[in-house]
Image (cartoon, rainbow, N blue to C red; front, side, top):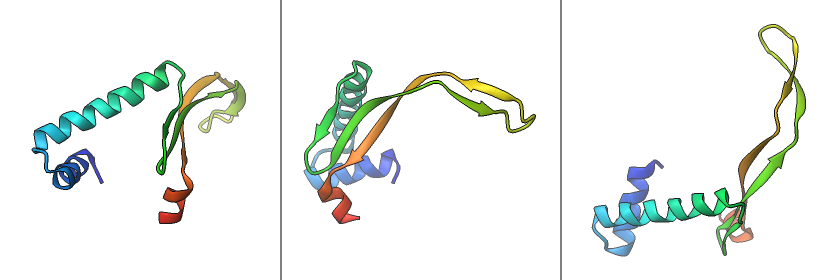
Length: 89
């Protein structure tokens, strides 16, 4: 499912115009992005939890040359599905 299909599904389910559903989806995604950017968790009961996880610096290899390299520490978004979502899958 891509964004357009999701917007259409939201519009159909809620009775909103597609433009309004797109604006609502954009607002939700902006709020989640801002919360994760601030280091907060976003908990959606029955769906799951979005959080920021820190990845430590680690050793790796350049696949083309085989040379050992250091992969820098980073932060990444993670999602943990709620039990209800897992059961639905």
